[in-house]
Length: 312
Image (cartoon, rainbow, N blue to C red):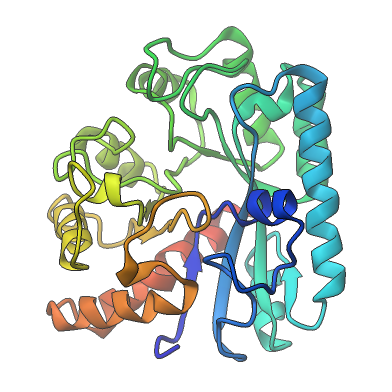
């Protein structure tokens, strides 16, 4: 890597590798531990994706299965990857010459409507929880539906804040986002969402939503999924993703924009379809005139500052 480092807020690598019985070093996935040069300051969020159709104990069992898989990979590659919970852990991993792995959950179905599961997630080191996927679960409803947060969801968000698990609004629908704004007392984030003004997909953020996250001290991870970059998904140039960067900057997002690739969970265009190609984005930001300082904030600094300020 030519960058000083990068932090990626979302991937589905655990799901793919666990399903396909692959290790974190393999030739098939977007992310593989051997694709990033040793010594690179790389922090990767590994999300446990819980599909909409999993409910109750089935969802809990699946979550626990994925945690066991993740812990097994940490043990197998203990010389390369360390689980991190806060900025001090990130620093220690880098100083030891390791990559940093952040555990997250995508889909509040993992809680099975049980408040005590939030404490279990916290003990496992889960740092971000994406409240919904596309459909409904016990917390609320995703981007293809129109119901807001449930009563359980409101209680769960308060408990997540108490347990120091960051609320992630990617996939949450507009109604749920509005409900969250009324009750959230801590910053929340969108780990993998782009601008709806540039690409009209409902999974992307409106300007008002981006500004709400910005004003509350949150961050927004740029998503590499082609259908969230351009309407219709026909993107052939990284300049298409830069349009989202420039729009977010116009909204005052210099300290808000981060990375949220959606690696191993989406159809990603060839210019960014592997973890080592993050260099392409760094080079494109520089070539587009953003400057080294701002480019490094987008790739690393903004997410690192958020972790330092909010994860204890």
